Image (cartoon, rainbow, N blue to C red; front, side, top):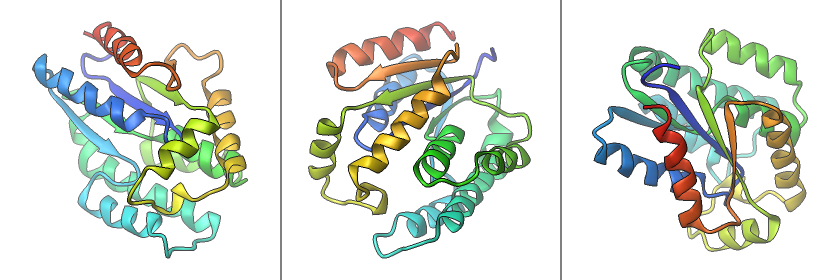
Length: 203
């Protein structure tokens, strides 16, 4: 594995992935490890414009349109940020390839082979070095989403949709060494320690 891996945090809404990325950022700064952070959708200037379009509460895109918007944002990130920083800095990504498969295939029913093909077309042979998959039960998911003051379009699906997506994530992670499942129903401080301990093994 490269000295500067690509670390991805995956998970459905309310699973705590963004919190753990912020905590990991603090740790990397303390250790003086060079890194950059991206989120999907979003990241580069153009990708953030696409993010605003996708997540706008008034948007009502067809599922195929949604897919192409996500991939357009990813392509902008790859071409303008990821490609030139790969193996020069640790790259932290809040959602990446598996999110597209989990949401657009398992959640919305888009053909999985098409998603995989388009990802390969954009990213060539680039893949995450390691993925933390954050899981959450539906009771905690509802509670955490309800506490959000600014809800976007993806915060407003029914529970069955989130269940399908999370099951999809778990299928993607099954029997893979480069995955670690973080149960966000457990104590936050325990999960912080587990993540940092794993990150230390990369250095």
